[in-house]
Length: 398
Image (cartoon, rainbow, N blue to C red):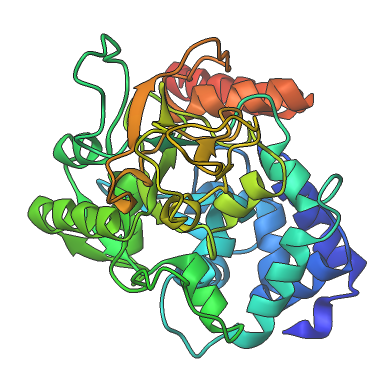
């Protein structure tokens, strides 16, 4: 596997292709080591030839120059690894190359497996994700104006007096889905292979939720298992008991996943902690602490998954106390994970004011276009779409 780490002809075209996605992979030695483990040289070549849109086996045969009988088993193996998504539709199967993040990095650790050196990959991926915070992979993932993901407010914690209704909750996404699946947490599984455990004792198994077409793929390939709505709803309740933050696609129509994130393991929460305070879309709400009720026990400090709660620094003595907790408004995601941690009922949610963030795109394609435009990478996507349209009309004309 690792024999292609320094093979420029294999990995550079693959990295170039992945970097046409809204979230690319910053090229460095660590990345090449990771890709050399995940891909054989032949697989790297095939993946580098994928168009930006989904493609059929016949189309990929033309792009790679490989005959059907050679290419089909390669695609099968790539799908089993979670590197490409296969989508059966009638008598035809369509294939789509997954991004690295959110994509085959996560899928690598979403099941127990013996085909990959997971201890080595866990170490490499953590080093890769956290090195050079301002110019490395963290900047690539969190640095665009429009976030790829957004937080959701915990069900039941939206202020009764609020007039804001344009918000998703985790249970709403589940109830509106036609197919759901559950899988292990990529982040906690990766931490386990680094010899670490969750400080919140949050579950690793059966905790991450996917819905829709992506969920069908994950279930079909063993990265998740099909689940009922009742079970998925119970998982949300379990996540709330562990004060986890619900994260989903930053879109309005048909989000595809719900991650239940802790502050100690989750890569997305770490990004906010690293200073990318707008790297995750915030909800329309904000946590606030009543200093008269707060006894400064510190439970909310550990409950908050982005370290948005700390000692109030205004020096005001209230209710005979010198110390009480306060929320850092510019960091708070508005997820309400902290609410149930307070035995004094000192924390509540209020509508967020004077906070502007990019409008939430309608669909995933709109989200991708918006981020690509912000990063100056839109041209390849436009060209790909134009080619597909021309091909479609040529086919109709024939």
